[in-house]
Amino acid sequence: MSLRIYAIAYLIFLYAPIILLPIFAFNDATIIAFPLSGFTTDWFKALLTTKALHTAVQNSLYIAAVTALLSTTLGVCAARAGAMYAFPFKRSILGLVMLPLVLPEIIVAVSLLVVIVQIFDFGLSNWTVIAAHVLISTPFCIAILNGAFQNLDPAMEEAAMDLGESRWSAFRLVTLPLVMPGIISSMLIAFTISLDEFIIAFFLTGANPTMPVYIWGLLRFPSSLPVVMALGTILVALSIVLLTLAEILRRRGMARAGLRDKGGFL
Amino acid sequence: MTELISLTGVNKFYGDYHALRDIDLSIQTGEFFSLLGPSGCGKTTLLRTIAGFEGVSDGVVMIGGKNMQGVPANMRPTNMVFQSYAIFPHLSVAENVAFGLRKKRNMDKVQKDTAVAQALDMVGLKGFGARQAHALSGGQRQRVALARALILKPKVLLLDEPLSALDKKMREQMQVELIRLQRHVGITFILVTHDQEEALVMSDRIAVMFEGEIGQLDDPETLYRRPNSRRVAEFIGKMNFLDADVTSVGDRVTVAVEGLGICDVDAEQAPAGITLGKAAVGIRPETLAILFDGEATTRETIAGTVDEVVYYGDMTYYDVRIAGVADTLNIAMKNLIGRPVLDVGAATTVVWDARSLVLLP
Image (cartoon, rainbow over all chains, first blue to last red; front, side, top):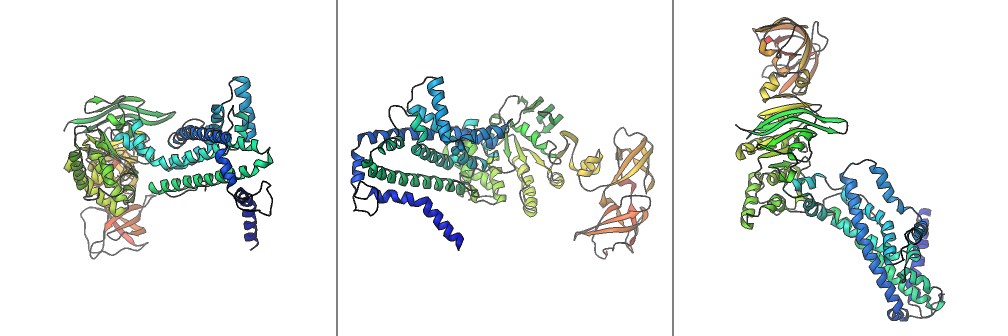
């Protein structure tokens, strides 16, 4: 019984602040405080008319899409190599690849800033953000894709080659369809990570801020807080949809290959 | 028969590990050839070098008179049935079987469909084409794998422990079906197995492998009756071993056998180039017998005591102790009408015959 109370308290602590987002996003007052004063959709309408926000959203979507593509490609290579081949220092190499998962993002951000600006003297742009986002999202992609590749019989590609296909077409015709749900799931996760990421983007963003950076900028003006709440509501909803989609695809992929579910992110 | 595959001086190293040692092998067209041996003996590696999945460190692999050096698996006239079957789970049975036909540009859709239907019919899966591959049973997967490999009419079909995942009944049924199939299509089959019975039942010739080398290469009967070494004799069937001393050689070989006394055997029962001195003698359990009450024999007899009884239904295996021998002798007796199953400790008479002795170096 006491455990149940603990569990409920824990969930409230975790999710209550997020529930506040939609509540105040629809509240008819600029001050974020109870009691609520009335229902309005003004804040969402304000979102539609803010030009700078649109640029930020476009920026973020572009960065997230490219990040998803690049980190999933890298993830496929790493997961396939890890599952199918034996090579020297395999475990340590795969361990190093997973390291950004536990590195504090601020450290990654500062060191990348130093490397990019001081050492290579590149200008900051969307591409610097993309490079950093690929760095932090690749471990997640590998973790997801590992599951897909580990369940794959290495004889499968050999069988395709034995039946006359080249190495590449064996991969394309047999491996790729079997891991496709994992690939899509990996892209969705990478996309979500990149879209929500703030610290690295804050340090490495060029002339055009990403959406989280833009939101942070808004916080200096108390009057725009409800707008931020409205934007936050949309973002949370979008993240939940994307993550659920990723998990559904991962499970469907397992079922399709006739395999037992061995966990995942959700 | 003409030679289809020849391996000359084939060696394979994995780092320091010597997986294949000086393999010389010639396999004929239409032959059912088996590579038999314990796990880790290199039989699968050898199969994979023929298939083209592994290169050789040294030596020459020829198939159909062509050197296979640098020829990848997809360009070789071989097809393989994998131990895991490697059925593509995202495709239907028909799509699996038709997979190898993708590259056949000279066949139209109708011809391909006909070929798939014929292949499925041949392995007893008529009408299974539309089923999803992951919903098949083990035996059905095996058949799909066979159909998928045979549809390309390879010169050689390679089978990597194809029956090991099946239960005993299914395995025995598939053994018979495979033999029938091989005779029907006339393609050379090379089977890798660790199951000596399977190899004996199915093969025209068997190469027994140990630690990367071929220990003996013979037809099943010769292999069983005249193993050339103790390890082959131990690996194939059951064998009793007795210490022996060779006292004269020639057309006949005289040998003093532990417990049995002086025996005079044919030179054929001894390995080539046998020398005087210490040797071993092997006796198969079914060539020994227990003399039951009321039965008579003209052969040699010796007194013994039953030490262990293992009842198999159709057979009973007795371990019998005879004077002057440290190990017991294993004797296989058919449970014919009127024959009792003896109890442990019973005094018996063991019947033996010098003609069934196998001298081993």
